[in-house]
Image (cartoon, rainbow, N blue to C red; front, side):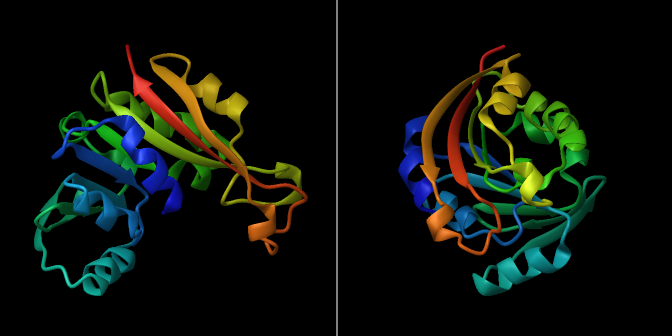
Length: 194
């Protein structure tokens, strides 16, 4: 959460902006974003994670079904139990921001472009995103989480997005059991301009 707290304000989003959090699990980040006045849309395939999130935060949810999955709606947070790749264009067009702390690094390389084509590509022009990745020698560890380096980020987002590195930090000393010889976290600001 420190990276979110430090860098989210740089996006300059208006209060009430709808923020997509793909592969959200039961992330505390959603509570923080909602407390900042945003409308949060979290998506995860795990019904257990969603139910635990609601229970742990004592949130009462209105539940309904759609082609995208089961929707759990609260005052500021909507959670969809379903596949992030299956979100429809209308749902994504209402999101003007995206917070990606867990999705990109959870996906193997062969799924990352599909993720960009089905999620990021459907966000409206002018959307802002905060992307947090890990970089480590991929041959030293089987993901997830996977290493997604800056070269890959810039290549994948070169069409339609501007990419700015906000922070790069060596975190190996804080993750001694990670099992690699190097480990960095990188925070990017992405702005859709096409």
